[in-house]
Image 1 (cartoon, one colour):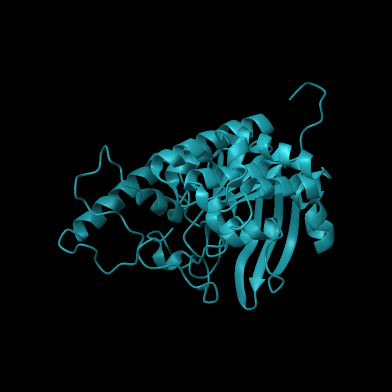
Image 2 (cartoon, rainbow, N blue to C red; image 1 turned 45 degrees about the vertical axis):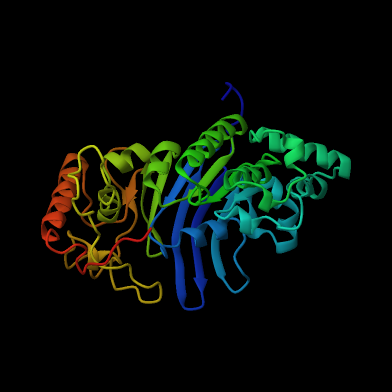
Length: 359
């Protein structure tokens, strides 16, 4: 930032966000900030509330969802805007990259016209101007022969090219915030690497902030600056990615990291580590800490009192909701012991009866 220049507002600020679907409390008291040009990864098992949080931030939840709390995008409180008022400014404030580009794109409209519609509707361009801007947007995401590709339909493109079209649409109007819902999951490894490299280049150039929903810890390590771990509708740990990987404080985060296969040091054929049990249903949360029934460090306090999100360790911003947080080398040693014990216990039982973590 140039000296004397005002500080840029965060791409996204979420304060005390709650989402309910009838009796189901899907997101509970979530607070999260995505800085300008920053990638924040939202991690957790299926049903942890990741997508509900992101969709609530993007104002894309159905009307049946009850949402409370504050959501500000680039310093603007969008939670106070009515539906029609937000629709008028949505494309200039945020873009969305879906997991399944084939399902997100209109199958009977050429992709160039779909990209151009953003410029026509939200930037007031004429049809020829919008078509020209669409070709430029496709070129920006490194699609070869963009003018020719603009005339093609989604089914005529490869999966990687369709995802590039989605990225072009999301970033067409240079919004301050991009919400990406597992956008590389359906891609092969080489295409995934290309897309991640492209995202890295575009965010450095455009300074957009990314809220990146994923279960791929490799993607988190490569792309993200900050990680927030969700469990049973709550953010149970958040902090800089290197701190989360090197010294996680919450036992759930430790378990997620322990489930990764280390191809360099892991014994060939050794069973994968599993977090025992299964996550609770959102309508059937146990008293106290929701992770207590699965936690190796749980005590009586854990089953009675749900811990608040508090500072963990000495790193600024690192927080964890745990009565008995782990620290540094002691934690990593404990995770390795847990993984070794799990492997020994299951040597004669290929999968055992314990529940598995599903991301």
